[in-house]
Length: 521
Image (cartoon, rainbow, N blue to C red; front, side, top):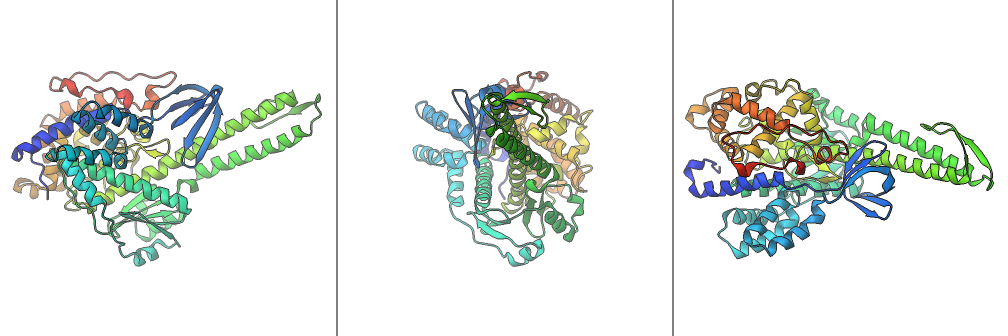
């Protein structure tokens, strides 16, 4: 087991100081993607290009074309995959430290694979740079593909017929198209690389499992629920994904099968058919004739041919907007769930969790939620302002007390939205504002000394927490609440009519260099 005890490793203290500064930096630096706000409602963060009056939103499955007038506001520049090359080139002319910071930016923005070559180049320049050496060693381990685990019995337990897709470190049992399965595997491999590089940089050397991690992806929610029922896991029926510790596997279902998605797409199909029929009527309309028309959601009107064609074009774009929002929602749910659940598998199989009960549930879930943010159909990286969790957090009034959460009060009885929001919020806050203490907390839980070993899980968590973060939980709780009141997503911060949050109250023991620009989360 790799120890995290700062007082025992002076060289590690230096590494942690660097990691702490960089951790704050990767919260400060933007997770960039275009920000687009529709006139008719809805907002997206996704790669886009503007060509004259045309706005083209670019997703993996295709392009969505709109007119500039369809938007209230467009904020350019928030695209990590586009920004990386320019950042790397600029850093190369600024020196070693700048190049290292750019690599760290890439890793925490979900671009670990893209940063691998630069990491190896930096290692060649300074082989004794400890964090880089650890990350390069991690890259070497990740290059060795795993072998398949035994799948027969698990496949039987799933109760469905599946196809198989493989990556270097995952095997996916699925009911989707080959292209969708390959995309899911690529996402999981990207998250896996980010997980290992993150902890390697912080001095935690984790093992890469020799066998591929097992993931299953149901096409239908009903089959997912049937599997949970067969495993006596009905308490998790409201979840979208589930980590099964006995099978050492994770399962999830396609959000496309949800009532919300099905209803939304059916409405869009009906509107498209209505517009197709209207188009047929207009095509037959004599040049100077006028037509009385009533369409869904539109007031009745009399139009000529030119006005009718303009109306069809506008309404088709509105249907396209609805389909775009549905598709992005599906991706955020599907890929966010996949990223969340693979972290549970990694924590259990990489050695971060030495015993199944070493971490309280809030910490296990809170850590997994740091990896689940999807923006514009791509993985956004590590510890971003989590759009759905942040909304859930804000609904908790008054903000929850700290000590019951640290004691794991209420956890272990299935999925509860408020408790998960609290777990995400606390881990997010601790990693951003107290990174070194957070690592100390992990150390105490991973390898408790004799005075902690005999405590109940609740007392062990609280005692370790006090040792890592100090005994003044009241002040820490207040700072946590005040800090979270300032957190916004990029779409919120740059909205046409933004609701600006209050600034956090100053803390005397907060280093000035830790102040961050929350517009870039």
